[in-house]
Length: 348
Image (cartoon, rainbow, N blue to C red; front, top):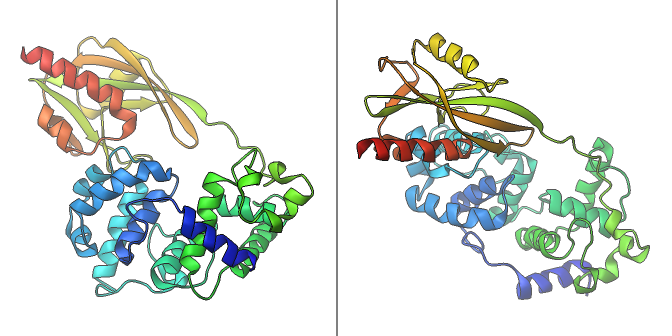
């Protein structure tokens, strides 16, 4: 019995259970794979179930308002995934007349679908024998075939893909991809792999030479840059100001007025004046921190009262119900709780 069948037999016995495992609906498989980008599997499970309950079909997703989609995604992060998923659903229902792509190459024509996601969906939903190369598969393949070069080098990346393709059986390629993912997530771990538990240890070249834990040979990542941010909880008439963000980071989500690069009250007051919002004294009420992929927001939160609830093109003077209904990013979680607490105390 060869490597592929050995690993598939292990997968049949030991595979992890998730709400999206074993489903045949291409729509649900696609949604789960988009959610799994940059997000741990255990985190995705709850979001996936709620999202499918809210948007059970690609047609339902295509017809939905963007705010509703972002709200359902709230807290999952990397919100461009939700916007691209929504756009792609509309393309499927419009240009493609409700027909899902059948191959990885076709899937990659949709917004937000890269090589990994395309291969995962095409192999699981349509049986195309293509490897879904993510971090787990890269780690397993570099150890299995003792690839010692940096996987980020284009020629090495192509070699890893070709090796992965050789592992794909003509039948059950989706299960093979998921078996490799499970192996990387539970046994062939970063740092120190649990080699004694590995079902395919007999085939692992890196383990034979004693260098498995040194692979993959990845270049060191730069730490995220710390960015000071001033955030204003600006109230008027019992409501608080929210701004629909237009910048690439968190675009389309509602945030409290903020200034990136400075965290003092004068900088925030100046930014508010540019919006036409005049406030009295801004009092510091707390701090918060949020980590993005390439930056860390070090936030100072300020409380202020506006003299007038001026109408703003991208602004909303939000009630407690509005705050709960509108899509706010996780970065605003602490500020959101401060705002809700203040509103409840002010209401008596």
